[in-house]
Image (tube, rainbow, N blue to C red; front, side, top):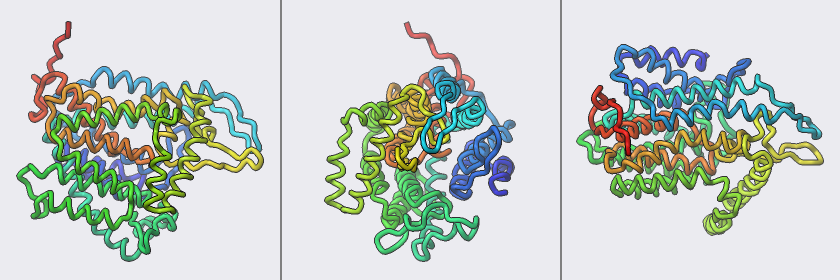
Amino acid sequence: MVLWLWPWFAALGFRALPLDRAVISSCIAGFLLLPSNINVDLPGLPDLSKQSVVSLGIVLTYLNHHHRRGPTLPLPRGLMLIMALFMISPVLTVLTNSDVIQKINPLPALTMYDALGVVFENAIIAAVIVVGVRTLSSSASQRNILLLMGSAMLLYSLPTLLEFKMSPQLHRWVYGVHPALFGQQVRGGGFRATVFLSHGLVLAWFLAMGSVALMALRGAQIRIFGFRPQILSAYLWVILLFQKSLGALLLGSIMMLAMLMRPRRQLVLVAMVAVIFLTYPITRGAGLVPVDWFNRTVAEYSSERSGSFETRITNENNLLAKANERPWFGWGGWGRSRVYDPETGRDASITDGAWVISFGYSGWLGYLTQFGLICFPLLGLFRYRARISPETSALALMLSFNLIDMIPNSSLTPVTWLLSGALSGAFALARRGASPAQPVTSASLAPAPLAC
């Protein structure tokens, strides 16, 4: 019932807020409060889940604020092309997977019915990006993203502290089930909190994002709950330490160091991350990623973590080899991209990283278009880095590190897509020579001069 009602509640509940704050609040509140890993199967449509209802809530919130919209910022043509290919990709995947995979437990052939739900899901993602472009392109709106994300994680730290003491139970108390295996949240003689998120690792990542968002506001003359942003950022960092997630701590530390760089240099780092991620299946398959060195380094820190990492690498190798059997359009759904024991038919795959899931499911076309929607503004902002505000640069840095986190984890969320839209809007403004520090006006939407 909560999943069914959320989009309508979001459209009405944030109506009193300005448009940009309403959209941001709808996204962050839905992601942090709705139940995780609970899906309602809808015939011919994507499952009703936290991801889909939060995205629908963002779109309905925007549509319900139609009377508050300003001039409409046109979408960059490159972004529109990627969106079009993103919509076509599921159809091509189905057309190239019309065979039944004969094994002990046969996997069915794909039909256009299978493509329908994925196309609809991709359309919702595209709509969220459009909303971000239309409402969050100015630096003032992007400062609101930083402010609301940091403030939300400060409030979320209270139930997080509670679960440190009593173990992750809030999701079960409110929604009746645990979102993840309870044993995976036991660490170092204590507990990882989950609150209403799908796993303790996801909460750790958002604690890191919240801490970095507050640090990005250190130059602004504002106080949050009566404190300076950098003090609250340090508080969230302490909470992150208790969350016991080495990956989030490592990425968060690098992000904090990168925040000390000038915005132009930050955008150079951001562009490098985007290129590395888009080419990751090639470099990973060619052995250019130093996973063995990283495993030895982890082993010096913890033999248990090293064993877990080695298991992950072995599974990625097997899944990547399977994906390369149909590299262009992938294997599609119904578990066709997974690896099975040839004797027992048992599923022998462990899929964690968003990159390997996407590449196996939809091949190069799906991979490049899905993550191209994220990397497009990161590469575009690099081109116009002299015109980019510090708020935009900070969000670009956070989004690029979200890409890095999607190598070991599946942290692709509605927040990711909304940030992509906001940064695509900033790129569109910079391309027209408009200052991102000013609100979008009719003058800033004048066509850009043609280059000779």
